[in-house]
Picture (cartoon, rainbow, N blue to C red):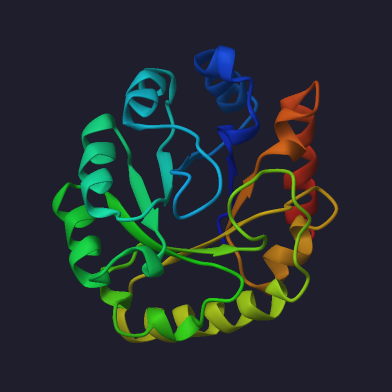
Length: 225
């Protein structure tokens, strides 16, 4: 039976109270804390660096899931591993040598993953599945929170799920499938039915007064799948 994980993105949290926000959303039922790193180079926005990750880490009693939207990635992989990241994902377009970047993550003791933009081909996964703990599919174009879910992502989720299931059948090792962008209570079940098991939600949670009510509602929807 699939274990579903909800990963609130602190991109939408109150940045003046990040520690409190992390504690509050974990108390509300979060399984991961999603940490979006943007460099105003790979994407047109600037967010958090390793020092913020290190500051937030003591408040995080669940794994910190760092999504690097930066170019180049290798130096920041090492910096975020030292800052307390548990999972580090990056975009293959931002690395000159994807296998080497994945090795840096694994060598630092973190779980490793690749992130596919809406227009990135699934084929980039095929030769590195043995290095992956997670695949993150973007259901919006990266750079900003609050965007709407791109509907054709559902077909891409099904395609990646089939690839990961085939790999699991051969290797006995399961790779998580995370989706980020426009995830809300009213579409999370459809995303899960397509094959995702980990769900990043930012504004859908942090823009509401009761985080637990939102997460509970998402879990009720997931229970229907």
